[in-house]
Structures are given as C-alpha cells and as structure tokens.
Length: 445
Image (cartoon, rainbow, N blue to C red; front, side, top):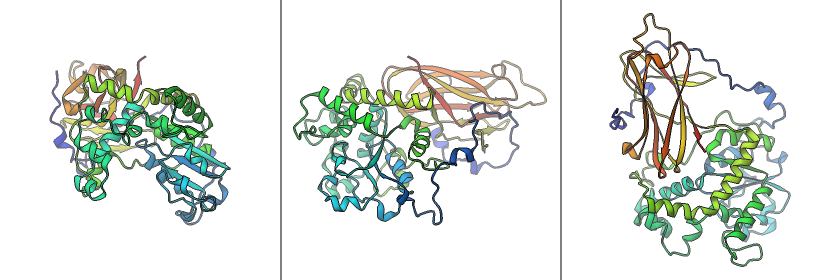
C-alpha cells in the first residue's frame, strides 16, 4: 500500500517554479461543451457599461441576498453588488433591517444580510430574493472552524462571546453547550433563517420543529433563486440568468476558512485537524435534522434545473509538473523522470456515505511505450492529514489508452464525516503523464 503522508511540505513548489519542458500532446476534445456560443448566451443579458465599477441598479428591481453563513456568501455578495451603484447598496449586513424606517430602506436597491426571511419582509416590495444553501453538516463544521480560527486577541478586543466558546470547547462539547444565545447559531440555522430565527410570523416562539420546517419550506418556494454551494459555478451562472445579468468570466472564491490565516495572519490563525467520533457524528446529525430536509429539497429542485450531474472539485495543488490551461480543460503535465504529486487537495469535508470519485489521466504517444505492467501513477483518497486512507489504486501503463484522457474511477466509503479530504495522484515518472485539474464526485445511493 503506497504511503503518501509526507507530501504537504512540498506545497510551496508551484507551476511557476517549474518552467521548461515540452507540453504533452493529448486529444483535448470535450463532449460536454455547450452547443450555444458565448455571444448567444449574453445577447439578452444586461452588461455594465462605461466605468466597470459603476453598476446598473437603475434597470433592476430591488434584489435581496439572504446570506446564510458559510455558504460562499461573501463570493456571491461581491459578484452581485458589482452591478449596483455604491449609493444604492444598503450598508446593513447583519440583522438590523427591522429597525430601519421605510424611508431609509426605499433609497436602496441591493440588500445583502445575515438575516431571516421573516425580517427581510421589512424591505418594501417589489423585490426579488436569492440565497445559497450548503450541505448542512459541512456548513455547521465550517461555521465552527471559522469562529475557532479567529485569534484570541481579536475575540477579546471585540468581546465576542460566541467565538470565545468555539475557541474554548471541542466540537462535541460545543454542540452540547446550554447557552441560549448559541442555540440558534448551531441548531438548524438554515431552517431558522428561511423562516424566523426566533419567532414565528405572529411574533410567538415556534410551537415545534414541524411548524418551523413548514414555514422554511414554504418560504423556499417563494425565493426567486436558490443556489447550491456544491455547484457554485453553475449556481452563479443560473442566478445571473435568472436576474438578467451577464455571468462573470470566472468565480473567485473568497473568505475560505482554511486560507484566511495566510491572507490575514493578524486576525486569523492556523487550525488543527478536526476529528469526528461517533458521538459527535450523532450530535451533528441532531443539530442539522431540519436543515437536511430543507437542503435536500433545494438541491433536488436545483438539479432539476441544470440536470443531474456529479459534483466537481477543481481547487487542487501540485508539487511537480506544469499547469496547462486550455479552454476545454486545465491539466497538470509531468515529464519523464519527474515523480511527485500532480494533484492533491482540496481539503474538503464530506458527510458519511458511499461515493465514487472520477479522475482523468492520460499520456502521449512516446516512441516506445513501457511494459503494460509498469506503474505510472498511484491514485488515492485520504482525510485527516493522511490519518485515514479511504481508497487507493496503482495504475499501470496498460490501464490507460495513450493519446487521450482516460476516466479512472475510485469508489470509497466514509463511516463518519471526513475532514480535510484529499484526492491525490502521484506520478511515478515512468511516462509523460497529464492529470486533469478536476475530480468528479458521485454519491452512490
């Protein structure tokens, strides 16, 4: 069984450090390309003109972004506020809109807030609303880790008690804390934001889970667009089309908990690996019991719009090879005699279940092919910084057809929610090898 545990110290070597060599020639035909041209897709879209920082708010209805924490909301916010003039963007970002007067609210056209559907009714119609949802256990873990990643001095200077609790307690103990102010943040937060965080429409405490769930599902139907975090590029594209906007050329992820330390070390610190045991797994399921119903409903509706498809990961690293970008695909090319990781990452989280990962590898037409039993790559799936090996496969020259990219499937099973999950391809250096910078993931039901 191959041991790949010591590759992290090589992350600093990027494609910019490894110039030279000859790109490997592969057939790059992509059967999944859309049949419509980019000009066709944008004919009816509103395109900002003149100053790129000046938006087009005058031609749009009021737009409200209901920002559920840790759902790529900062990324979504930056994309959509770019279409509006700054003086038409409401400065309220949390849950204070209910204290604004109608006259104050009427001067704005774009609203982006961590607030509930119920409170956002203070914005006078007409308006349209969008939101994005994320797999609930992953979202809750991300929220906990985000709070935990703040430096103590930042928490103490601002006296943020809930973040202090995340720093002081392990995940399992944190999820059991009997703190009234914490409960709505860790117990079915998505459902609460889609209904009313604390009270029902009559201003009374929720009678039971069913009443709150039914309100959230009803409001989900009223929201004009609901994207899915796990399909963020598709969500951004479809959201822009829904509101008659030109989709951005690419989606730039922001506010990524794992990367905040490197970007802002004054406010954030590196996080230790997070282990999930059986008791914590049960607590996570309990705290997301309603959110899972809401998310599954939203996800099914979203996939009915774009068509069933696997989830795609493309935020990878490599320690050797050269990054080659082509309009049809981006790939990492490794030369003969250059062993090392052509692909690893993206350090994601994944709830327990059965899955199938699909990699795409290929090699060119060398003058003399190696023997069919020659190992050319080792593919594996790990989590917890290498503590858990979920699947592994050694590929030989006979496993791949020369001259094109070959799909390589690797099924695996997670008995508990996995953290820091990585998909990895290690090049042996026996042939010139290319790996597509994308891994597809199917859940096997």
